[in-house]
Amino acid sequence: MLSSILAASLSMGLLAVAFAVLLVWASRRFTVQEDPRVELLANLLPGANCGACGFSGCSGFAKAAVEGKAPADGCRAGGPGVAARVAEVLGVAAPAGVTRQVAHVFCAGTQALAKRTGEYRGLPDCRAAELVSGGGKACTYGCLGFGTCVEACPFDALTMGPEGLPVVDERKCTGCGICTQVCPRGVIQLVDAGRRTFVNCLSPLPGKLVRQVCQAGCIACNICERLCEHDAIHVLGNLATITPELCIACGQCSAKCPTHVIECRREEEAGEALPAGAGQAAS
Image (cartoon, rainbow, N blue to C red; front, side, top):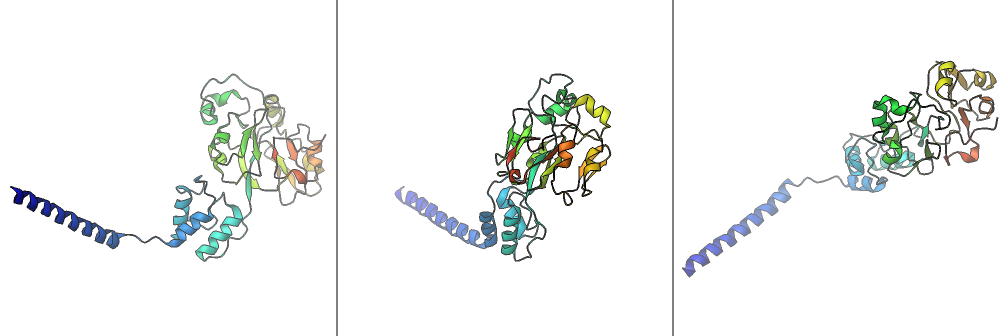
């Protein structure tokens, strides 16, 4: 009886040793060697894992970049500085023309200035409200104001202002673009950091219809176009449109705009956390 037990124990022990040796051999034989550049790139990235690059976090982007499936400037949150370092690690030319971008809210229709068609009683989410008669806001092109963008921002660069519009802190904004993706009306867009003049309205409706729903909308009066000495602003499709490359931010258009929808920040204000319209010139 004792010999049977010893034989069984010995057999089990030998099997265990054999399986251990087999596992060691298999792990060495089938281990996929990861390119050391993947870890290096992952350490260079912001580490926010925001997913704005289209991959599963920073490690996913790092692996894709090494495999040639992602461009060197694919990390929006990192901006041009990170893009240059990624290119250096990959041994490719640094991306040309990469500029830092930040989010901007193209709407000045505060709670006091934008009319409402009713009271929305549902999920406090802009996407849900858009499905229910536009959340009760009369202007179908303006910010719904439920703060979905604020909740989605992984960098705490967005807050809800006291007048019911989101406020962008450009010092924290990385230009990842997540807020632009969750906004159902496209009110938030990415712009070059340092830009100082904006038309905070997206409504293409005639001025008469705009006035019926919002006191802060563009009414296509053409005053701004006539005033601009640099041919930087034109009314296209009932909406004033600025060519940033031509604009010198003199503030004339903002000062004379009858609805104060044109925002012109002072140079020292560029990059600060400003509510919509805070940088307008006095009229």
